[in-house]
Image (cartoon, rainbow, N blue to C red; front, side):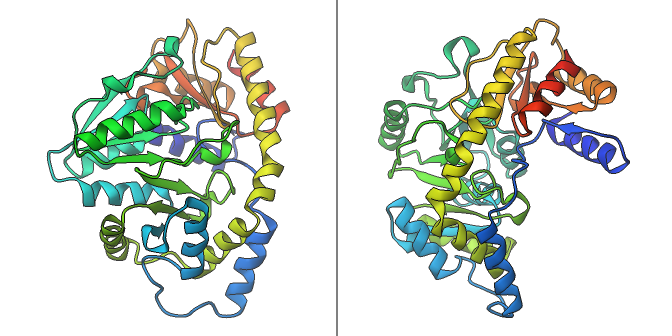
Amino acid sequence: MSFYALAERALRMEQEGRTIVRLNIGNTNLPAPDAAVERAVASLRQGGPGGYGSAAGLPRLRRLIAEREGCGPENVVIGPGSKLLIWGLLSVLCDRGDIVATPSPYWPAYAVAAESQRLRLLPLPTRLEDGWSFDAARVPDARLFILCNPNNPTGAVYGDGLVREIVRRCQGRGVPVIIDEAYKGLAFEPISRVDDAVRVRSFSKEFSLEQWRLGYAVAPAAVAERLVSFVAQTATCVPGFIQEAGIACLEADDAIRAAREEVWRSRSQTLQRELAGSGFRFAPPGSGMCVFATRRDIIDSEAFCLDRLERTGVALAPGSSFGGYDRFVRISANRPEDVLEKAVAAID
């Protein structure tokens, strides 16, 4: 059972009244910031901007993001979550049959997006024994390279030197690099900005706006213009009240993320401690949310996850969906510490 099929099954079981601890998905299970909710409600009560908005996004939001990312507003495109923006970037940067390379394990959405557009996904395998890192010299020839930093599912953070060397090598071949920074706000140490890559970021993790669907891309003006056209033809635009919520988040950026930093450290440390005590092996992640772990009794990750879901009500994500890592499972540290302790004990 694939990542998305298992996620739907767990959700249906929960809706049918079964108690399910969903550690299989990247929900933060933290409330949206008060400032975001208040700004969105105020926007709705005032009637909002009315009509369709710009596919590029509200000017105020684009300016705030430009200040955050060290670019011009013309380089910023707002979209309904980072997933659609990555999908759009594949559309505007690649042609049918092109190769898209990415380190594996990788987020399953990359494979789905590539397949739907008749692109070939070329994994760059990494290993637990190497801390899920790799040598930049191993980056294969491709039309496009995607680097998820911090990585989903491993939680690994690629060092500044490695990232810059990857970008330098790819630029020398005329290969654009997309850095997926959806989990950047959950990193335990600061991650440097790399201006020579296309960067995609999400409000889902660092601001807990998962269901609001808000993200942005930072790209050269010519690429951004084509991406705006993609958004216009697919999602039309992001609703104004949601963008207003994003503005409120960025206006209180440091305070919001500082208040949540200790939550992610504590949750991750608890999950790692409990997993180690239950015989799991993993590389300590450099960011919150995910631990990608293996154990001697995991032979078929899909069968393991389905068995634990049915018997214990604990949902895990099978490693097979992240690039064929069939002896691994991804476990999200997305619940309070006491819940994580009980969940690991249940699957033991």
